Length: 483
Image (tube, rainbow, N blue to C red):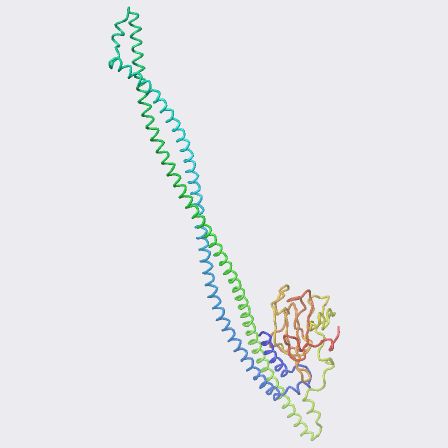
């Protein structure tokens, strides 16, 4: 599309270049008549219509790009919302997974605790059962003793004759001994009874404790089983949550990739839109400049025509006075012979030495390069002409400035009835402006190294016709001069 636009306005360049005469010769002045310019003006108007049509197409494309950009931005905003929602869902899922893992750990801890309690209770039950066994044995043994005592009591009429024992003492000492023996027997009987009842009570308490411990063990085992089932359920939930998380992450990655593609397309569309706008502005500027140049050329041609008419009138009056048939004065109105210093269409644009020729670099070098020991040597117009495009303000190192040409001047010339364009690139300074009429040999700038340049030099091009982006009209400048 950009090439098409260049061809459109460069076609206008050829036409306008053909109507402007700055060759410095009277032959060019003879060809540069008002009638010729009027004819060229009509042709320019046709080209202007074509360019305006192209501009309308460009504007339509710009509006379409703006619409596409708006739709893309809406889609991008939707994707951004989806990404934010997905990231929120992922975070929620991660929190759910963390919660599930925490619950699983809590269940594992509780199960381990209950299992430890079961082990402790079972050990305690075992110990209590041993105590019950020992207690029962003591009770059984004591019951044998008590039964013997009861049988003795039954034989004696149901009572022990402690008085008779005491009264049968032979003396006081024997009484004391008998009293002590009776007391011991009575104490022993009481102890046997106390221990017997204590063991029975302890047996009951121990058996109750054993039953309670066994019940607790059963309860703990039941709880452990429930917790294990709950833990398995949690583990299944965890697996499901992790699968869902993986799917969310995969979806998020997919949406992010889609976002990157849309962003890349949007950047490409914006860049294309920028190129369209830049090209549109350039075309409008060049069209305006060319129309102004054409109007100026027309006025200059009219003035030259009026001057020639006045000169012819003076010649006719002089001929009438001299009554002479000499027509040499009339012929002088055509401009005379070519000046001695214009033996070639183009002069050398600077003093220096050749650094690269036309057609090098695999045939892609469409001009010549010249250098000089003076890094800012002056640059001169190779022929009289009109400046139709200028790029300035470029600095060294900005390889894209001026389309790679850096500070550059484009001029159009009309020489011997033909149009030519010249280009002076990479200059450090520019001394002319768009619309300036420049004479052959007039300084237009200084050599430099701006744009896509590896060092100070002048890149100079000559085009047989208008300058075009594909350089189809480029010719070798060295056919007109040498270094």
